[in-house]
Amino acid sequence: MTEEQILDFDLDNIFPEPLGQTPDGKRIFIDNGKLLYIQKVHRTAIEKCLGVDLIYNFIDEHRLLFIQYKCLTDENKFYKSSDKHFPEELKRMKSIPGISDCNNFTVKRKENLRLCGCPVFIKLSAREIKGRRKTPYSFYYPICIWDFIYSSKYKKYITLDDQPRISNEHFIDLVKAGLLGSLPNQSKDINYYLIENSKDDRLKLIFGECKVNNGNLTKIN
Image (tube, rainbow, N blue to C red; front, top):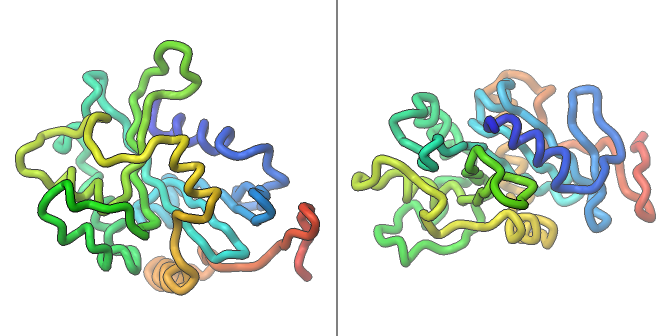
């Protein structure tokens, strides 16, 4: 499987059936009474600015999560030298407002890394679906922890054995519990940063188009 195929599978299966879709492709969900837009931004102006492939946008909470998808080679390794585009993508992700403030970027020893407030994640996946699994074996890494692993001078590649990491199941549980994602003020800063750098106010991430009433989606006039 390719990175985009895994992304599309997640888009179709992580949450229940969408309530609808906007003209620009955002899928609309209700998760535990919260309005959620999931937007694929792979190969778009948003990816060129933020370096990510997928955005979870909890509208009423102003909570954003950003995902970048990466796949292992057939040897089940992610060679740093094989992805020529990734250093620039990593630079763009680390430039998202609030990311560089994370204490994990100053940590020198792996045992001192902690789960933090970073709303940006790398999802690293195998390409093959083995056994009775429905999806390839994969894990999520907060951007700060990925940067720690990726920056090591002693490793030429990353594997799914590299830790610390978050399983698919734990990641979705933490997202649904509201424990992952940006805070409202950070979301506003990211929204402003995206519009300023792209010079396109149509790419705004903070907006109100719909609301949830008794589990139903209604338009805001």
